[in-house]
Structure formats: C-alpha cells, structure tokens
Image: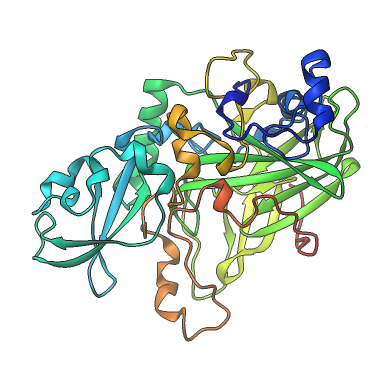
Length: 401
C-alpha cells in the first residue's frame, strides 16, 4: 500500500482559505490535488472500497500488477518501434539498443541517453530518424516509443516470461485509485494494469477499470451507490443491491475470460483471459468484434481485497493513489514518470487472431477502426479517465453458470 505522499504534488494551492486554516489544527480539508476530495480521506476511502478479484479459470499470470512488473520505472522498460516510409514496422528495440543504429538514435534525439528525464514529455507522435537500423537499409524512418518488456509479438511467449518475472520478484498485486466528483458525489476509479491481454484481440499491456460511486467522502459514513463495470469499450452499471460485495463495502470483479462463440468467418481461438471487468460470471454476448461472446467463469485464482492493503507505507504497491498527471513534481519523484508519458503500454501490432480483419477495416463499415492488437494508453489518456458512461449500459448477458 502506498500512503500517498502529498509532497509530490507540484501545486501548493488549497481548495479554500478555510481549508488551509483548519488543516493544521484538525487535519481535514486540505485538497492539494484540487479534486474536491479531502486529501487525508483518499487512502482510507480507497481501502474501504477496494475490490476483490475472481479470475478466469484459464488464467495463469494475468492479474492486477504494479507497473514495475514490466520495468516501467526503468530505462529498460522503454522501447521504440521503427516504421518505414510505407508505414510498416521493420523492428522493435529497447532504448538501450540505440547505439546499434548507424548513426546512433541519440544523434537525432540526445535525450535518449537519459530517457528518464524526458519520459513525462514523451508522446506516441513519430520521432524522425535517418540512418540504418540494425540489419536494415539506409533511409528515412519514424520511431514510435512505447513501454515494453517481452519484445516478442507472439502471445505464446508471454505467459512463460511473466511467470518467470513473478517467480523472481513476487510483486504485490496492485490497484491504482483515482478520485473525481460526479453529481457532487465522489467516484473512485480503480485502475488495474495487466501485463497482457490474451483473447481474440491479443495485446501486450492492458489497463482496465471500474468506477465505484459513493455517497460521502467521509470514510466513516460513506457507502456504495453503484458500480460501473467496464469491458471491451462497454459498461454495465449495477446498483448496490445488484452486485456481489464482500464485507459490505468491497465489490467483486469477475475478470474477463475466453471466447465462447463468434460470428463466421471468424473462429474462437484459445487464450487465457481478456482482463475485462464484469459484475458476474456467465456468457456475455456480443462484447467484442465479429459478434464475440465471452465466457467468464470466475473459477480461477481469487485475489481478496485485503491482499492490496498491506500496511506498509513505504512500498509503491498494493493501493496507489493517482492524482492528475499535471499535479506531480516529476523532478523529485522519478518513480512516477510513467504516469505522464503519453505512449502505449506494450508492443505495436502484436500477433492476434483478429488480424484477419485488418484488410477489411475500410470496406466493411461494421468493423471498428483497429483490431485491438496495439498496446493501450495509460489511465490519464484513456477515454474513461474522469468519465461516467451514463448512456451506454450494456445488458446483453445470457446466464450465470
């Protein structure tokens, strides 16, 4: 658990003169991150409503992990794809390999020798390079930076690699909590990072979330109003009496499963799990491309809410509070650099069963604009950040096995 260190906030503004006056006396009212939720109440609230997770039966290593799991806090976690003038990826390299290029990439982008100092300014925009990538011809290229760990687009290699990482480091499971107000009530967004998504749309790196609506920001009296469960760009909202809850305040999340049925000519492919956040087990119809139905068993590994509440204020795992990206002084908090970087979390164009859709993207209007095999953006660049999907409640649910 990370008891949020408010010294990382770059702004020293308080929500009001009154709060600045009463905080030193009563330890209430301070709102340095200006989200209208009292700072000293954020962690107690995040603990009180922390979810539990029931994973799918085929899940081996897809669980909520800290970003350190893929070295997102280290230079070795930063990669770049090399794109030729035809828009084709011709290679993917960790930034530590930049000197293998002729000339080195640092000749064009000197910051790459000290990437930590520039992470908070990184974007998915192309960076120009002229030269010879390893084993390629001399020419003009674009570089696109992303977080990475494996470097192999074949999902069959992911599970063994992440199993080894877990065995070697035994990271504590982690959720990232973010607060905002909706209709004057606090909403806690719990963001979960999964090392990869192994379903019909395979991609390395996966950020999922739920919204927990509560009726007060005072941890002593706050109760759940409803929970928004998000999966595959869809959402189902359930009121307090209509979802599974543990010990009165901890919603249970059923983590996405495997393909159950799909429209012809696509075929279901074996996979471990998708990472979507569901309110219950069962068959969830038409949740993905090509009429993809998902079977969520909930009979895999179980992660209780108290696994995230470890009582250690010095680690950076368990429950981590996320303010807004602009609220952090990154010069003195290098461990949070990943949060500001506007780059994908994973490889560009991993191997995926949905790749067969790519040629039809522009001639088959029912297909979405991508096949879902790219690494996703981080939480603050996700369309769900600070957002409530009021008019998009998915209800196509078949049965609970």
